[in-house]
Length: 235
Image (tube, rainbow, N blue to C red; front, side, top):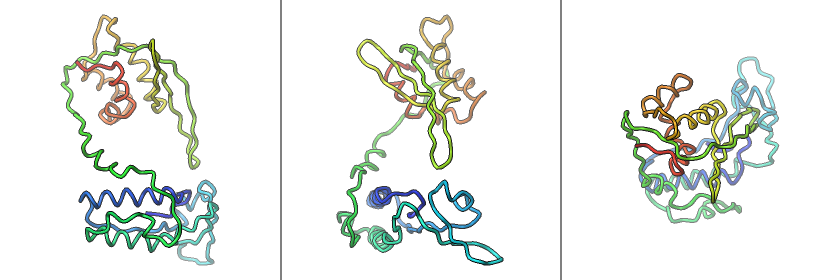
């Protein structure tokens, strides 16, 4: 999809680059670019101000589908239609992957911010998702300082816990959704080697899932991976 309210020109160009790489590597074989269409009872249609648009409703009695609207970003997303569809037609036929993205458009676009080997590097970066249930989990790091952060995006308020870890030479930070962050901060204190009791992976998983879902998704998240690189041991 392209032309979603609040979408920038840069995001459209970066989306095209991601699609190009996915086709070049054979991950996708078919696709279709669809320009965003507004309907009256969709989340965007119900809260147009949050998405910086003004709908223009017709005087009809049955339904308000495909409502025209003014996007206050001033971006004319429709001008991307031909270039996106033409590039995709070529990618589906396995050609023109080396063409510069600019060549698909008759107007200037920014350079993509996506690394040309981004998808390939993601595929080659294998992760071992197997952990022995009896493995001991130990935290060798220090107690972090914590700050609650509030972020508002598209009318939705999200709170996270920013945790800063210091040692003698450097510091690093992670950010976790507030409820999970509070759980993590209290749990790390229990995982130090100075405690009489050591926790197994199964015990940690069980404790987490008494409060939240999807422990594996949390355990292999970017934040916890950062901790594993800085003193969270699986033995």
